[in-house]
Image (cartoon, rainbow, N blue to C red; front, side, top):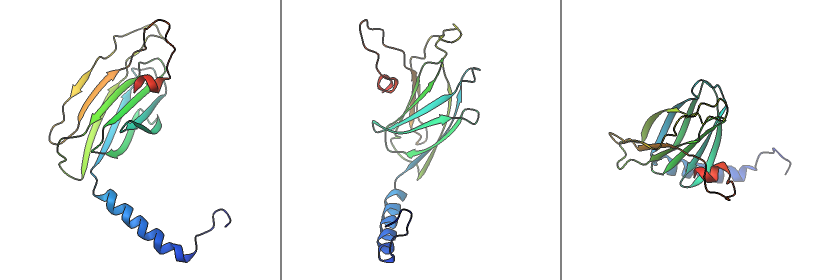
Length: 165
């Protein structure tokens, strides 16, 4: 059939039934709505957000609109957000599922300040080792930390996402 052509009517019912089944399965899974803001410490550099769910890279977004981002993710999976920007340490934010889900929708507000690495302006700040924010009232636990480069001699540089995971 030519590209863009509609499927024959005999397939419509089958497609509608499959969509209904998919909607029924996903409607019962708890969702986590993440609203976040990234502060690049006055640099104005571009930033990208890598979303890893269950160990698999599922999305890469450029963060625009004054550092704001929104995500709609599964509330019952381990999530890792990796924020990468020139002149800053990569920041890893792990979101661990809540022990109990208090309803079909959970909201999480994130405020992230990236740490300058000193490559652009010479001002190097100590990297964030680890920050743990326990979840309350059914909210997930959040752990954030900076990834620093490997300092082993004679090692080959690994791609950034490989180091950050």
